[in-house]
Length: 425
Image 1: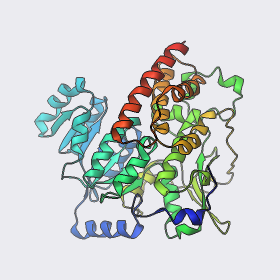
Image 2: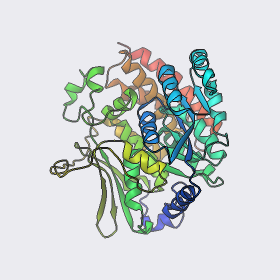
Image 3: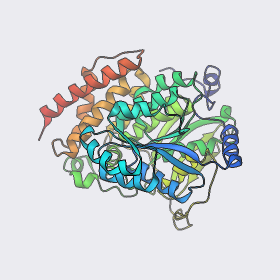
Image 4: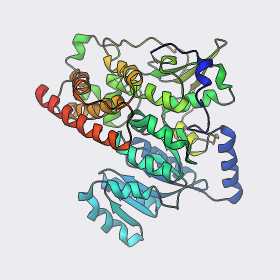
């Protein structure tokens, strides 16, 4: 790909515009309007029983004067969803696993809470008029269709499902051109970048620097990586996350996905986005400007802050969580990631170089490979092997529409499953 000067790039794009990220003033005006009417912001939380979803509901419980949940949706954890619905009394609760629906319905019917099940019910719920913001906290490809439906319905989106922009960033970008929707990032890295950019002239931005903890294996040799177990991979040194994202952190493909996501969120060329390993997870990301200055957002490794910032329309509210202290940032270190030991990081630049359905294929293959690893059917290093083999065998579409993404996702999963079977332990 030919090197492009950032100033030239700005001439043909809408960096940091209302296309994806709202201008801070616009969000603040909305927030002021809500406060003047004394009406809590009505939100939907999809993926409510996962790590981001439960932390979102913590914030709602802390500030019932500001937030009200009207829709809750979960994948299969019906007991947790029932508990959440009883506590927050939404208008609608949805379980994606249709086999769990009867239990949900029977538990919530006495409370007058509407219930539904299945992926289609979740997608349809995004067009309901009783909420203005949706927190997309699902994991993986499943977040794509609900996000698309929310954009069509002009909902604002607090985006925690990075795969939406990984799989179909170009499509989402086009859709937002004709929608009143805005996306505010929930991922700590992208929230940090957003916060660093507030008040800055986008023409002065030189590069984005996304930090990575390095996961549990950052100090292991290649030979040691061949022997790691599922239990080893799930012991993240800093963050408490779901199993899938924890494995993605261990392979560092999560940073590949975050680079892709940053490209679409901030409209920055891929070559001006990089990852650095920062084991302490205190600096969540940085922005370097044309004069050499670097701005960073620091905080304890806790997702409540970026969730609260997104829900609060890019305004700051009081928080009960532990604050950063001098002891936390007395010794901060950074180093370049080793792409020989963690080759999945390279998929970011391959996906952005090739465009089309490449990232969709990578995501589908990764989801299959991670599930196989967690089930004890695949070695840790074979995750990269499965993704590479799937990329080589999956048909490529250079200018995909939604149906192309659906077809590519399906075909890539079929090929990845066959590769898992070939490599199975």
